[in-house]
Figure 1 (cartoon, rainbow, N blue to C red):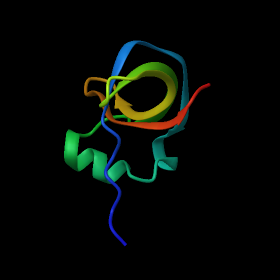
Figure 2: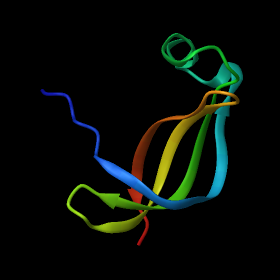
Figure 3: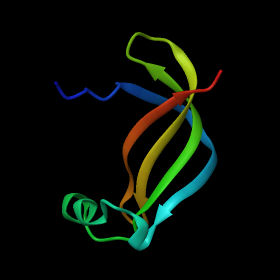
Figure 4: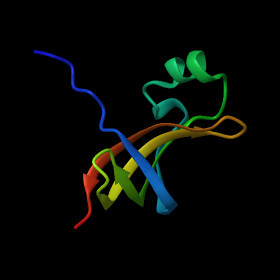
Length: 83
């Protein structure tokens, strides 16, 4: 079984309907984020945005990412397409 490659996309415009999914001790990969990007108050977030896919298609999708104050948003993932 081979590992899946993450979908290549670019966020177009603003992210709307932003919510915190997890923060603090409930964030499972906090140690890895601290090692990779620096210590911070990491939170897992989700929101809705227009995304431009690698083939040029523009769609609305739910995206997830990690962010910390002073470090910024990191590791965006597209979770589902909004129809």
